[in-house]
Amino acid sequence: MIYKVIQYISTHADRFTDALETHLLLSGITMVLVILLAVPLGILCAKKESFEAPIMHVVNALKVLPVLVLIVVMLPLLGVGFLPALVALLLQAIPIIVINTYSGFKNIDPGVLESAVGMGLSKKTIFWKVEFPLAMPLILTGIRIGAIDVIAGAMLASYIGGGGLGDFIVNGIDHSDHVMLMVGSIPIAFIAVVVDISLALVQRHLSRYQRS
Amino acid sequence: MAVNAIELKNVSMRFGKDSKDVVKNVSIKIPENSFVTVLGTSGSGKTTLIKLINRLYEATSGEIFFFGKNIRELNVENYRRQIGYVIQQSGLFPHMTVEQNVAVIPKMLKWDEKRTQSRVDELLKLVRLPPAVFKNRFPSQLSGGQQQRVGIARALAANPSVLLMDEPFGALDAITRQKLQAEILEIQKRFRKTILFVTHDVHEAFKLGERTVIMKGGEIQQYDTPYNILFHPANEFVRRIVSSENFVEKLRVLRASSIVHPSDGIEAPDAPSVNAGDTLLDVLDQFLTTNAAAVLVTDKQGGLLGRITWEQFRLIPGRPDSEIYRGATLRAVKGVRQG
Image (cartoon, rainbow over the protein chains, first blue to last red):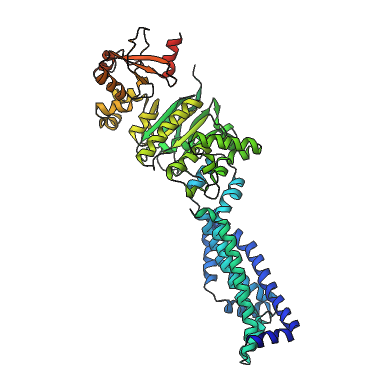
């Protein structure tokens, strides 16, 4: 079986690398955008009370929608292709990162903030040197979960012509072709595991102070 | 005339518009180099009082002066850096090592690496945490007492003239608390800091404070020496607070320096002596075990500050108004000696 998978990949190298590239690009761009969007949103929720309820409601509602539903909903709105897939994945990953960023900032010990202000640190210094590093472990957890969801979810992009490794899987299912299925799914699983481990290592480093 | 490190003039504070005052029309002067404790139950406004001083809260009315300058006219962050702040939960930055925690303010003041380093080492030694052992630890790797020691070192980093301490030892076990109390007293004397120390523990308030502020319902009930509070309570509330202390307990919290008299120069060569910081109970102990007529009071270096005779000692409980008490602080007695 494995042999057949390798054989397929080597004979269809062009198609495979194209799909892999699309898949990585789709997940990568999604993650960059989602971090740029969700982290500030989470901070906004934690800092400004008037934003907290509305943003959190939307985010919580979004959280319960399966990614397949999001992808299908994109069809009438944005048509087919890379862009609607990207938007769908973006919406899928936003909630967990907003929520974790929010909790990361909200969970900081008030005594720590009180003494930071009391000792004369500026707001800017407190944000960058105290709050952000302390919220970081939780933010990273959000990013980790989000990244895995996106990498796996990107497979569904194939349904609306978004390309990626999902093409092989969809084809494999359609033709009951197990080799084809594996050509799509093994690399996805591999990427997911590698990303998860790398982020876990970063996280471990950033939260080393919590272990006594 | 003594300079006032901190002065509050008719300061009131309330949180909401319609709520009642948490601090009510408080006026108080904290002289430079003095150790003043603030004693009160929870809800008495004692913590609010010190948060008003470092502007974590803004007074609703009234004015606060820091060495004569209205604190509203000072740059708030610069001003806070001149005041060390120590709180009960230590407030250490958990993601920074001990060294980084202590170096926060020096770094912000852009001290060079060498100066910061030597300052950190010096301070850690001062609070009895060997730098080599503790520098690179994170707060989570320290005991509660050690965390408070780092908190004190951090507060002292930029050599502030004033320290505000909000129940800093409240969460520690009795033994650690006693050790830290002795150390903060020593630090205050050695570096001539002005300390305002909030506590709900009567013993702690009298043991540490040259003077104690007693608060209730946002108002100052009495601001006086421990001796006067114990023997001349200003009102029923203060009387109740200190009445649980029997005579021996009172001796236990009063320092020998509170009733020391100038020596007339003729002292028995074998007269027993105590330290100025020792309690009157220690003095009593000397009287009972040595049969001497007077106990000498010395400073830390062994220099003679004065003496307490048995006659003077006996006057303590019965006639608090008598000549025995002169409200003598160490400095006043020293002045008499030199004059």
